[in-house]
Image 1 (cartoon, rainbow, N blue to C red):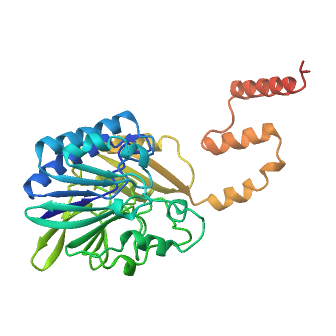
Image 2 (tube, rainbow, N blue to C red; image 1 turned 90 degrees about the horizontal axis):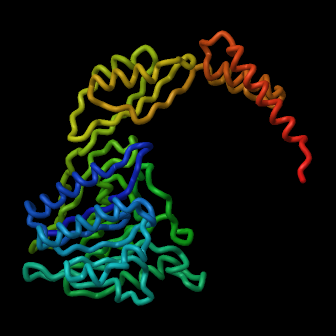
Image 3 (cartoon, rainbow, N blue to C red; image 1 turned 30 degrees about the vertical axis):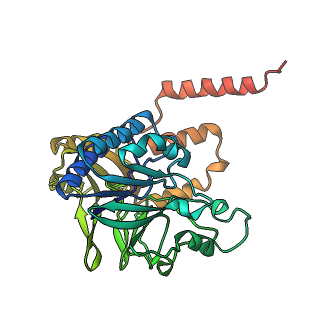
Amino acid sequence: MRILHTSDWHLGKRLFKLDRSLEHEKFFDWLIETLISENIDVLLMAGDVFDTPTPPHHALEMFYNFLHRLSIETKVQSYFIAGNHDSGLLIEAPARLLTPHRVKVWGKLSDNPEDHWIEIKAKDEVIDLCAIPFFRSHELLPQGEGDALLALKKYIDKKSDHAKILMLHHLAGMYEAAGSEQVIALSGVDSIPSELIGDFDYVALGHIHKPQKIGAKIFYSGSPIPLRFSETLAKSVVIIESTKEGLTSKIHPIPVMRAMISIKADEENFREKIKNLKVDSPLTPMVEVQLTLASPRIGLIDEIKSLLDKKEMELLSYQASYTSEEKRESRGSALFELSTTDLFKEFYATKYPLSPEIPEDLMQDFTSLLEKVKNASHTPQG
């Protein structure tokens, strides 16, 4: 039996103005091809199918189109759990429609631990799967009292003559976060100890976006695309295979769908750094530029965009910091003492440092507007 573990798709995700749908569509194309070429029998998706509990229509359409392709183009059995970004009720709603298509979903924690166990049968083999969707403390401890880990243990403890897999969407072990996750705690428990889930032959985790191994048989598959510029580690899935020696696992890389590049530079070297960029990806590479400047400069963003256009790249994020920041902050501490007119002059000088003074017509318009506001505030109400 061959199994593929993935998680944290975050369909419907946006990064600033960028819709990630094209990347997800290319990932789904790759995933279908991989399921076929790698002779995969079982797909495990460990939570965060969507980016929000109320995903946009195009994200829902993309998900169900993928399940349709999965049903007609492969013979794969697929198992999904809801993550903290998902609505468990939404995920579970079409469960009866999905079952004939070899799709099983767990959206919410059941009162009965047995509801979270299922036998997976393929190629004359049997594996027991325990699937626990994301849950909150009141679901695990409905009376509001008790030990969260002991309550969880009741769900995952089970004797079996077969290999056992746990699929879970939570923090576990000594993980390394990617920076784009929501921090979750289980009734004061920051992370599930690896020892508590170490009895399984494989643990398929979701929630952390950085692919990593946190135990001998415990893996975060990570998200299939970088959800922030800070996620620089290559993306991957995990392929698990049943052998005579037990379950073995290997990392299977996901190709880059859209390059995400971050540049840190100053006004002396940013042109050279952009010129030296050599990146290729099916979709237009997106660039984040972090610049350290002596002071604000007019037209700089337009110049950066022009340089990137020549490289067939697009500026998605621009962040500037100034070496004169400390002076500006100390000056800012006294701003509350200024009049409204002086505050406007201070704002203009900061926004347009190269302009000698506020244009006369703009100053007149501001003074006129200020007078209207003052008069309106003294007009009797009735």
